[in-house]
Image 1 (spheres, rainbow, N blue to C red):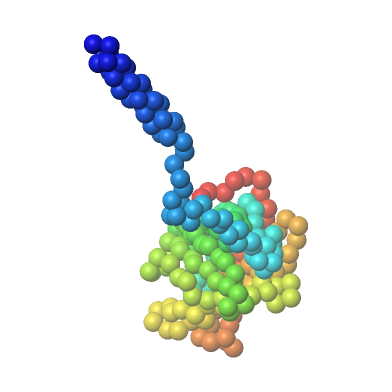
Image 2: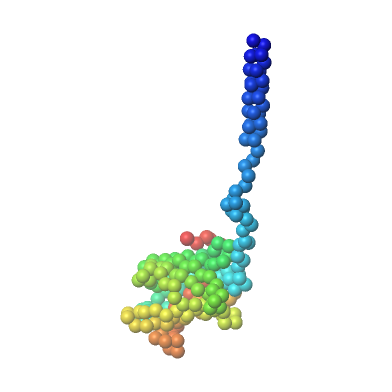
Length: 209
């Protein structure tokens, strides 16, 4: 009986020691997998705004009241005037410029628009996407914009009443709290006539989004 009891004690002791060793192994952190080391690899730094994008944001960002004026033209046969608000602000990471625009009066009804603009180094110009309540297809991504000295000039081609139309948007007369945008249209770049003048005046109020 002593031999049997001694053998049972030895077996029990071995089982306890094995359980303790196994518990210690389970407490050790798992070895990193190859896929985990790839996922934890250092990410590249985020892109930084180009000098051109920084310049555009500095020039245009803010909350604005707008006054619109048009002489009689094919686009506005009776001419007219309007007023509203606009807000321009930096997009994510300062890599784009966003705009919301609301006005009433000159269009004969309420007008709303939204746009986003960015710098394209391949063409050395700003590109944009503009959507509003008067564009038949909803949005337009044609055209480019460049600085000409201290004047910002955008060119766009489109159609009006089935006829080809070229439009030029000129931003000038920069003041600490205002600037002016003039829109000219015509059948080609050599036959443009001013049709709309919009004056932006800085406002402390937050414009609609």
